[in-house]
Length: 112
Image 1 (cartoon, rainbow, N blue to C red):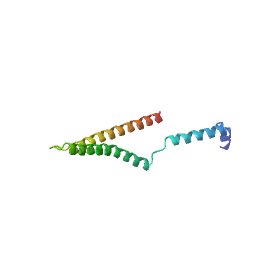
Image 2: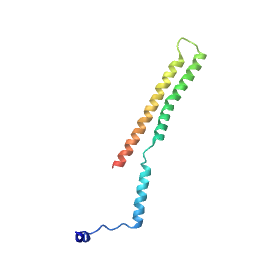
Image 3: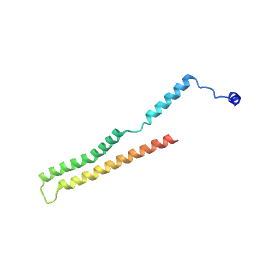
Image 4: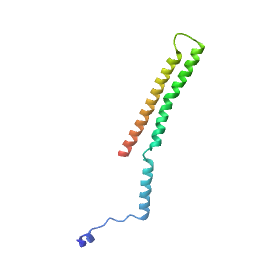
């Protein structure tokens, strides 16, 4: 059996520079495709939260100002707070959809 192993043609051994190049390429690929950590996820949740909270706060502030300047039977504060909520939710949804599309496109590029 040892004669069979000795008679088998072996693959040519890559040179040292080829081995270093292959390792460097693997390392660069791993850095590019690093999985996001917990802090990244928490940061994204915060970003989405602020994208909803800021329009709501702006709507409430404008509503308060309008209610003080033009008192009436309708509450501008409540109406503009709800409008800010709707705008914020739309912005967050659009941003999440864009990020999801980018992740799917990147995954398809890596699969090919």
